[in-house]
Length: 202
Ligand code: 3PG
Image (cartoon, rainbow, N blue to C red; front, side, top):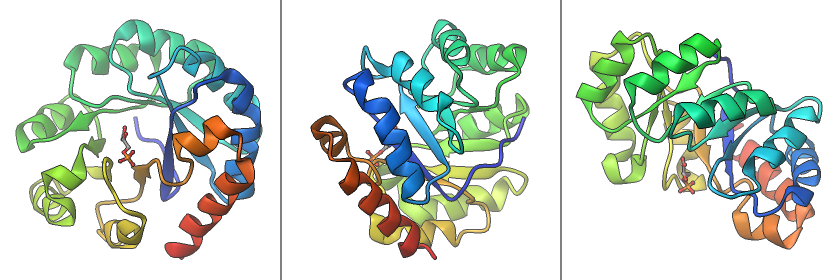
């Protein structure tokens, strides 16, 4: 199952549900059309539910570690799931739920297993530690039928370089909506950061 996402996928950490609607609107106003709400805080699922109800934003769940979390995410309105690593049981379960899963991989063996299980979009995490664009190029040479979603430690000034890889359609990161800005309720700054990110890859 493949999902068409835009080039920039903000990775979000929400500490309170009250921020959710304003955050969704701030991202949208900044020209972002998709977001990943990570299940790293108690507020995450409720925040996902609110964000998914705001129009013109495709919202997925990130940091999905278990089938129970996959269930809860879909129930809350997630259009896609992202996991930090490869788990065949989670992939099979996402298939049963009928929701696209972007599993994390960090080695060619994991990419091989994920591809064999039917995943055609693979998060490569944590990309800055794994070797950056050179690592993506090496994977792309042997997995030509897979697209890669690099994430983890990408600096905004490198966004364009990642997106110039033919096998990369989407990159992830927190720089479009840093946790501290969201927690401070500075949504104008989130819109500005998002807009700057969009302009930087244009
Ligand atoms: C992820 O889950 O993909 C990362 O937390 C995002 O990485 P970043 O915060 O370094 O951009």
